[in-house]
Structures are given as structure tokens and as C-alpha cells.
Image (cartoon, rainbow, N blue to C red; front, side, top):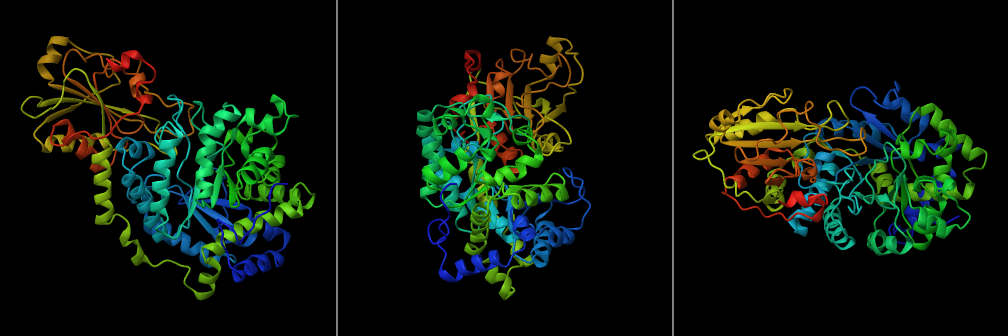
Amino acid sequence: MGKLVDLKAKPYNLNDDAIKWVENTIASMTDEEKVGQLFTNLFFFGKDQFSGNTLTNKEILEKYHIGGARYQGGSAKQVQELINSLQKDSKIPLLVAANCDAGGNGAANDGTYIASGAQVEASGDTTVGYNAGYVSGREEAAMGVNVNFDPCVDILKNWRNTIVNTRAYGTNADDVIKYTNAYLEGLDQSEVIKCIKHWPGDGTEERDQHLVLGVNELSVDEWEESFGRVYRNHINNGVEMIMAGHIALPEYQKALDSTLEDKDILPATLAPELIQDLLKTKLDFNGMVITDASHMLGMTAAMRREDYVPKSIAAGCDMFLFFNDIDEDFGFMLKGYQNGVITEERMTDALKRVLGLKAKLNLNTKQAEGTLLKDESELEVVGSEEHLQMRADAADKGITLVKDTQNNLPISPETHKRIRLYMLEGEKGGIYEGGSDIAKQITDELTSRGYEVTLNDGSTRVKGKTIEYRENVDLALEVSDIVGYGAQNNYRIQWSTAMSNEVPWFVYEVPTVFVSLNFTTHLHDATMVKTFVNAYHNNEETIKQVIDKLEGKSEFKGTPNENVWANKWQAKL
């Protein structure tokens, strides 16, 4: 058993009345209510994509007594209405989370994107990181969200890693600390619980824990000098919550428990040596630990679900993220508690950590006063002029010219009037995907400036006569809007067909510019490109500013990290 929580100490800092509420609430609970507090349920606007649950929201609250909620999609107004209804119908107020790692767009479809971790790093400006946290907190709090499952404090050591390619704030501990501290200072301007992830650290390998067990292969000393420094920094600064990833840390696990063999290595979510011994005892983390999503293969492939549902809590996690089948999972957890897999001491400690955060947010007193629910007028902050100006500033500082070795820039309607636009996109119909109207947005913006744009059909291999191509095309503009999640271990350019005419065969025929609106390492698949820009996002402000910068109306201010070259000498040519 790791160290027990001290609710008077950081990060809770509760007074006697708040602690009394926590303890009295636990004492009054049935076994079922205790078990329910350990779960965070995922709500959908429409069909439940994961569990197929058909219960009403009110039925879920009444039958399963959940402690936390997250949701998928929705406008700010829809989100606020959902959260208000959940809080109104819940006996004990809920922790409600969103994934705002780059702004309010993580809380609602119409929230304001500011800057991803990669964009903050490229800007070199902590103000951009602060603003991303500030807008995230203000917009999600207006909707009723009170927990932010971000930032990612991972270190992007492996250029092949696309899981945190855009979410990580740097390739070394110093940068990650500097920029995530700034983000969290901005987030702290709102009444929102801070949650960092993915313990014990992503970014060293290329695979995705949604699909396979993640492994951080660093030695004890290497981990201490990198991820260890990052986590100690945030624990010392009072972060309230840490999300455990489905990531193993074998070298450290074996150092902590010499009896472990390779076959015994489990992800952090199920490894007491990583949660109880390393995080809560050695690093003295006194806050709450939540698992990453429990439908991810890094966890589901470890053992039977019946076993790992309660074992996650026994290992030291305090909340369990998402149900598979709500009735079955609830039963697994209840059985694990009643048969002693989860001891009474561990259950009480987990509940204190969960309810302690609710008390820190004063959710109990707000519920009693009738001030817990949000008013629609608070949504005026979403997409406000102040936030849009911060988005513009972040775009200006972050957009990065990685190289222009052919001196193709600047462009203008006078010299590059006829543009052939090539759009590269990722998976369709996934959890996250690129914008379907991005080609039209780019075309409209270019046309308004006097260019003539022809959208290329990449489904054909036909290239045509090269002389004719040169006579008809003044600029080839290749734009990657590849966004993917949980379907591949590594997201790369997927050409529309074999030997597609969109592969940049034309770099010596006409001036060619490649712009990525998401992943930063596409030079690996397009090393022949001589002018390459990382723009980090596909919002309309970014598209406008990219074109401004291509035209020389505004200078490129972002700085790339070494990962953009993908360890390919050709990429620098």
C-alpha cells in the first residue's frame, strides 16, 4: 500500500469542514455508491460508439452512482445543457472532464483553438502556452466542465511517434516543463482541476496504447533525468490529478520489484510499483490518479476485464475511465471490492481523493446553495474577440517555415497565378478527422487574393505531359490535413492510390510548396519537397496567415525541432 492521502496538504488544502463533508459522505455510502464514485462515464450526443448503452442519462446516475463524466462532441450550448442536466440529477456532484490541450475546441465543437503543444514549442513563447491554458479553462468552465485532462507532459523523443506528435511541448524535459508550466498557469485562472498525462511518459516509442501495450524503455537514470524531472516539477507545483497511461516502464519496474520478469510487466494502470511505490510514495504525489480510457488495448490485452477492472484500483488508481458494458463493469468492480481485491483501506483512500477534489472545487456547497448549474449567458466567452485575438497571435508566432531551399517564396498572383492544389487527408469517419471543407476554405482564400485554383484529382496515376504541366501550372500547393486517432500505430501520408499523381513528382517542374496542417514530420514521406511549412491546425485563421506568410506579407516566426527531419539527410536538401 502506498502513502495514504492527506486532505489538508497540497494539492487539496482542505479545511476541517470540507474534510468532514468528505468523511461523512463516505460513511453514509452503500457499497454500490462507493463503487460508482470510482467510475467516469463517457456520454455521447447521439449513439454510444463504445458500449452500445441504451439507458437514459438519469438512469445511469440513479443506478450506477458515477463519480465523473466526460462526453464526446457537441456545441458549447449542448455541452452546457448536458452537464447541467447531469449535475441536477446527481446525488453527489460530478467531476466533469474535457480534453482541452489546445484551447476550448477540446470542450466543444465551436470552442476556440489557440495552439497545440507543438505550436507552442515552435513559437518559443510561453505567452502562447499561457493563452492556450487560459482559453481552455475559461471556455470549458463556462460550459460546466471542472476537470481538464491536459496538458500532455510527454517528451517527444521519437520522431515516429504520432500519438503525441502535436500534443507534446518539446523534445526535452526543460522545454516541456517551461511550456506546460505556462499552460497550467493560464488554466489556473479558471476553477478547473488540472490533470497531466500520460504517466509514466509517452513519446519514446512509435506505437499507440489504443492498439497495443505502450513501453517506455528508458533506464532508471534516463527516466529520472527526463520524465522524472517533469513529473516532480508539476507535483511540486500542486497538480491535482495525474492520468496513468497504459504504458509500461520495465527498467524502473524491475528496479522497484526485483521479482518481476518480462512476463510480469504490466501497464502503469495495473502496476502498483508504478502508482503506489513510484508516483505516490517516491514522488510524494498526494493527489488523484485516473486511468486512461479503459477500452484501449494497452489495458484490455493485459488480462481478463473481470480482473483488471478492480485491479486498477487495487494498484493505486483512484478512478476508472469509461465503461465497456456498464452493468458488467460495475459488477466486476463491486465484486472486486466485496471479495477483497480492493481492500477497505484502498477504497477509502481512493474515495477521499475523488471526493477531496469535489470539495476543493466547492461542488458540495454550490449544490447546497443552488449555484452549481451554469447559465447560458456564461457561454458568451466562447469564441470571444479576446480569444480570437489570442488565436491569431499564436498562429503568427507558431507557423513554421521548415525549409525553402529552392527559394520558391514569396508567391503572388502576378508570378504564381495558376495554382494546382493537392489535398492529402487521413482516415474518414474516425473519432477525430480532418475538416471536410478545408480544400474549399483554401481555394476561396486564394481566389479572393487573385489566384486561379484547380483542385487535383489524386485518384488517378495520370500525370500528363510535363511540358504542358509547366505551361499550365505556376505553383503546386500540396496541403496535408491528415488527422487520425486510434486506427494506426503511426500516421503517415496515405496517397490516394498507388503511384498517385499527387506524389510530389513535380518539384523540379514548377515551384512546389508543402503545408502540413497537423503532423510535423511529413518530410519523411516527401523528402523531395524543397519548401515545407508546418502550420499545426486547419482553422480559418491559420489558413489565412499561412497564405499571408507564403506571400511575404508576414514573416515566418516559428522554429522547428529536430524531429521534423525524421533523421533523413535528404529532408534537409
